[in-house]
Image 1 (cartoon, helix red, strand yellow):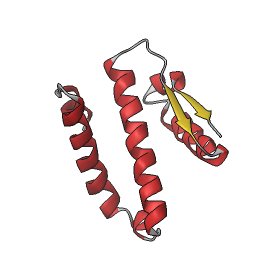
Image 2 (tube, helix red, strand yellow; image 1 turned 180 degrees about the horizontal axis):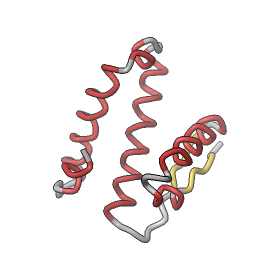
Image 3 (tube, rainbow, N blue to C red; image 1 turned 30 degrees about the horizontal axis):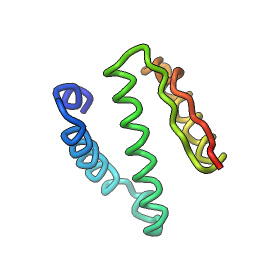
Length: 101
C-alpha cells in the first residue's frame, strides 16, 4: 500500500487511493460492520486522517505534523495506536495529537 502511495503525484490521487484502501479494509472488518452509521463515519474519518498524516510524515521527513481531534478519548486511542506501531514506524512518535474543544 505505501509503495503505491509514494508513486502518486497529486493530493487527489492520494485521497482516492486512501479511500479505496479504507473501504476495502473496513468492509472486511467484522467489528466495523457492527457499528451504527454515525460510528462508521467517525471511524472512517479518523483512519483517513491518520493515514494522511503518516503519508505526509513519510513524504516530508523532518516536519512535525499535528493531528487535531475533538475528544480526549480519541486522543488516547490514537496515542495508543501510535505507541503500538512506533516499533515499526518510529517517525509516528513525532506526530502530535492535540484535543481541540
